[in-house]
Length: 343
Image 1 (cartoon, rainbow, N blue to C red):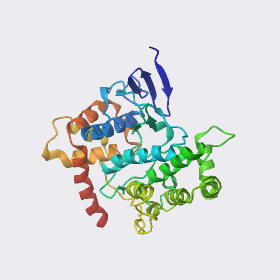
Image 2: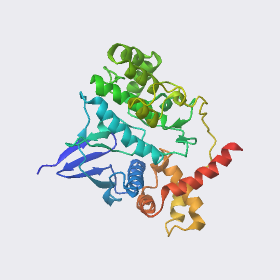
Image 3: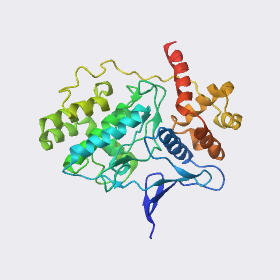
Image 4: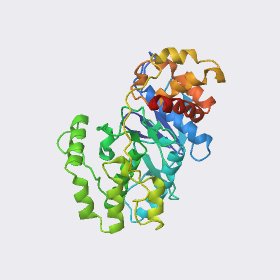
């Protein structure tokens, strides 16, 4: 059986029958700017796998920055069954949000469907672990694919939260119905900066509002998309709100949305010397050093530039995430952080 290879933005996927191997670029010197993506991917799959609600990774090879998962299907496409498929996608995202995971890159390529119409979400390389309110008060950067990029990715007026996934899901729902991206990439220049500027320009000119009005024929879906793609994140509905709306349990989101703005908090004091912190906790994790480990893991799963160096510690970090309850540590850290914010 031949191996099918798919190249992504930061990784390569090899499909060999029922086994999928995901690999991140690595070198022989222990230094790799892709380590952070590998760590994030494996850590979040570990959290979901422990809850028996998702697939889990296996055959993890830290030195090679690779792991395996079962074959889960092919990327979704436009379909006449868009409502049924979208509800299934929402239920999967609900599992993520119930586990306080913000995916941050929900696009067609990361949403798979198999022959039995089961939906699976993949690629947690850009995902983040939120607090109990699904907010990321200490997150300063957000990396998203441009066609589903939320305003929070370039405008830090408001706190980053699970509402970035709601914006992306709005883009996905539109594409399921129409078969085209709501926000288009630059037609002339294939360049990251050019594409970002091109999409931001479409946001500013509110091109999506005109497209929704012209192309979406069902009034309820027009209303839903306008709410999901609201520039103010606190006015976007939650996954539960959307499911209730599609099941005709509610007719609007007016009484559900949080009209209190989520303000961005910029002053944070994490572990600065990451390599030192990792080296200190290569031994067995115990109650005595849980606070320090929680600080370290908090940075690992939040700060995109964290692992630009120190790639030699990848195996240690992954092993820790396999052994401990990451969410328990994050609960401790967020509780401490709430006090810092209030002061």
